[in-house]
Structure formats: C-alpha cells, structure tokens
Amino acid sequence: MVQWHRILNKENEKMNRPKMILFDYGQTLIDQGRFDGVKGTAAVLEYAVRNKYHRTAEEVQAAAEEINEFLGRKKREKRHLVQVEVPNRMFTSYLYESQGIELPLSPEEVDRVFWDGATPGRRATEGIGDFLDFLREQGIRTGVVSNLAFCGKALKDRIDDMVPGHRFEFILATSEYLFRKPNRRIFDLALERAGLSAEEVWYVGDDYECDVLGARNAGIYPVWYLGAIDVPYTRQEGVLMVENWGELKGVLQEVKSESY
Image 1 (cartoon, rainbow, N blue to C red):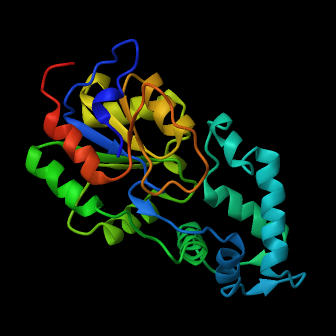
Image 2: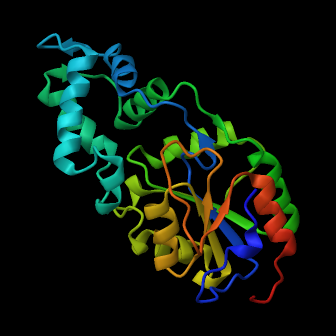
C-alpha cells in the first residue's frame, strides 16, 4: 500500500482538504475492460440500410484507424499531445459516408451502439460506490471531466447506470467542449462550473500525462488512481498515488482543513 504521507513533493506542495473532487471516467470511475473497435463497428453495421461496397466491420474499422493515425490519436502514449477534441458525431459521419454506408441512426444513437458494442465488459471500479457515499457524508462535492469523443449524454447515462445512487453535480465530456486534457482550458471550465478556485479542488484520474500533469498545471491537486490502470506505468516522486478507494478515503480522513 502506498504511504500517502510520504508523497508530498520536495517543493512542499500544498494539500488542502478539498471542497470538491473531480473524477476521470475510464479506468477511474469505470473499468471499461478491453476496447474492441471491430465489435463496436459490427454493432453499428447491423443497422445499415445501405452498404454500397459491402464493407465488413474489419474493413470499416481499418479505415477508422487510418483516420485516427492521421489525427495523431492512434498511439496512446502520444494522445496527450492532441488537445483539441474531434467529436465522434463528426468522425462517424465522415467515416460511414466515405465508405458508402447509410445509417438510419442519429449521431447520438451511433455513439451509444458503437460504444456499447466495443466495451461490453465494463463495470464500476471496486469500492467506488462506498467512496462516493463517504464523500457525500463529508459534504465533499463531486464532478466528472472526461476525455471522450462520444456525446456527453451517452457519458452521463452510462455513469448513472454504472454508479447508481450517486449524482455528480456535472459531467463534462470533451466532445461537447472542444478542449481535451491535459489542456488547462477544460480544467478551468470545470472550476467555473463549480464556482471554486483551483486550491479547493482535487482531480483523480488514471492517466499521468492527461490527469496528473494536466490537473497540476491548472493548479488543482492531482491524485493518481492506479486501481484499474491498464497500461504500464512508472511510479513518480511527488505524486499522491492510490491503489484503491479505501486508501484515498484514509487520506481524506487524515488531512486537515488547513494546508500541510
């Protein structure tokens, strides 16, 4: 278990008890399991009313990967360099029309069908419900800021379904707001929505570049959640790292209202 009291960096970074905690979505609130784009595309193609070139799901997904490579989104380790979001409704409109495929679905429906098909094994991260109950009891507000190309309504509905009984004050999907983490503009927008200063907020996420460094650059105290991380990582000095929600609960129980 990480010893949180040893985590403060050499510059004596301030740790204030937060008035609000903002969360990432994927591999933080929800463990999405393995993402399978071919399965997602196959689910969408079931609705096709026209497939001019008789494209298979594999062929359409290969075309999608070419576009993603052009946009710089294919390699995960470089995704933080792309800080302007391309909404999926724009991406899929081009993708399917360019492949001679006609769909009777709205952009929101395409998002839902594809996303559900591509991530069928999703589940809430272990202990998140109890942790959110603890925050509510403590009067600590909650919100979500997610790098997501799918529409914000699909994200809200999925979170409400996977984490029932808890209502976040707001859920921001970057598909609706142009900028992606780690760009500080999306963090600044969340602060504006919350009506709080950066010093009053913590941000919890699984991605070091987008979540930890992004939040820190915006003046928000970052927490690196490792409980559902699905890529190799290197522990970093001066970063509060937690491996489960009980551990973060312990931090909050110890930290005072004043700064350390």
